[in-house]
Image (cartoon, rainbow, N blue to C red):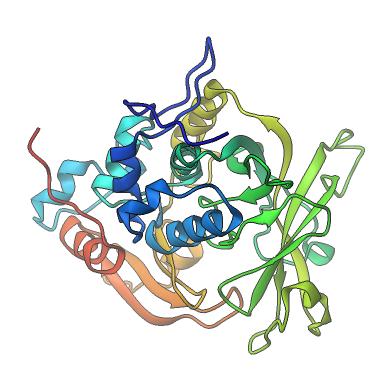
Length: 361
């Protein structure tokens, strides 16, 4: 599993015969610079230290971003204060357009854009990567003992990573958005990992997917559940291996997955659902969110009814820009941004690092 970068990048995994996506040296160097690392890191050998640094750097540099579903690229360059709408964008195009959007234009994406692209970077170092489908816990951040268990279909993709002589496999997920683990977590029952914030930590459990009603859901899949520890406002987790010691805290599920490598067509189908289905999470939600060094998040959002209802009622459409230091923390630095191409474009450039100018072919 040593480094074997091709002369030409394979931007999207292909079937018949299977050929995994992998970046060449030039694209790998550009990707490293995109996530704030030195281009000469491309010569490093696979290790848990390298995997950790790459994962954290990606989390801090590349936002979770659904703007491609809603806004055409040329709309940003006009800057004529035209009102933006929903579901008018090209969708989350994969393959080379995905690399161009995230690395060259410095936009973000959701899981089907971010995790497979990150996998193509990792393979160039000699990491072995299995892309696996996952279900998302829909009562985000809530205590399942009170809220119950409600899961999506397989709308998420995560990565299982190892390398020669690693003696372990790791869950890596740079595409979960708010609440994803910035550090790799060893694929071992009850393994834990810290976060950038002391307000949360993560744990993996090997188990059947927890459900409320086995009569309605008779065959919950076996696999792995990623949990996030949620603590009260003002509390801190002193050590991620002892997160349960914090009073009034609880484990909330994030995702459940099985060890079954996705075929490229699985990725295409999952991405199509997330881009087009009325039942998908983001076809009616514009959100851009970035992880901060302290573990908090800055988020720009429109389309969530509870958020939109609190906007100024003056006849203008707004998106909400805000920062939170933890899941249960208070929002601050709140600003209501007119939902037009000039105002939103300025925030995307200044706060999230987007490059929005059209490039000449």
